[in-house]
Length: 340
Image 1 (cartoon, rainbow, N blue to C red):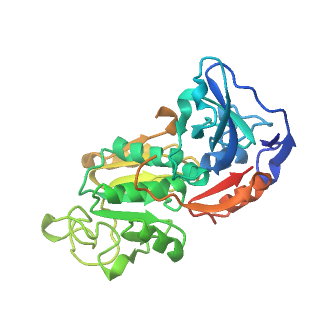
Image 2 (tube, one colour; image 1 turned 90 degrees about the horizontal axis):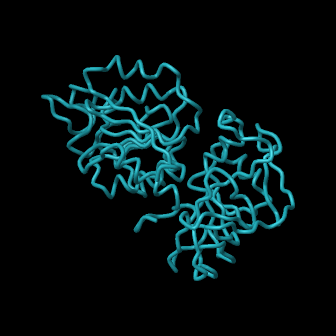
């Protein structure tokens, strides 16, 4: 069978398609004939070498989630799984293959109406976004900023926050075109990657907190529509979110801590921009009187209905390197899916 391995960490050119023998399911496992394989930000970080300290080595097969049909089961697994369409989480490796084994407890049956490609776009992304918002203690009426919203996790977070009754759902993204697509999914404010240069939906409100009762703080101590704190006007503001869901991290993470309202919470669910500065906690201590919170959330510690799966493109498994180039270039809106 075909598999994609990392022959050398760094650029996508280090990915290589190889022939290998098909796996045999061990006790407690199922064997799946892959029909769709999700390409995630974690895959890109591993391939780049950014996570070398976690023990990844040359020859690693990336990929964490697949969808397909169960063709065999290992000892102790109910044989009724054979022939069923499923989604499976494979951990941090093993997904970029034509046939994959997965623990039976990490396998979910697919609803008839859900395609394998859509399943990999919803899959772990929906779970991460859901539990990240829960981890932040998000409640209806609060304002939310999703940083790095054009990826699969960000898209799910936008939809869940909007459906959860957020007073405003702000997003950072790289272009006006992506911003319009995010608005169609529930975003109310579009900011550039730095969190500035708001493009207001329908011409209303300011960069932070527009359209709700808990936005940027306005005149008289209110937290209403737009404006810099204490001005009540329109235009950009220096703070004003109750919750930030951050998929990017990187050197700019501290600046997004400063955008939190008093008692605000930032939850980092990814690090596609690299690790934050080692001293980013100083930003929290400098704002001690605001009682800000920082937390992380990983899918390793865990399909939502009525959410739209966004598949950027279907590519053959052999074009995994091309998929990673598109990810590196920031061209992807949603998720690229590899098809064996």
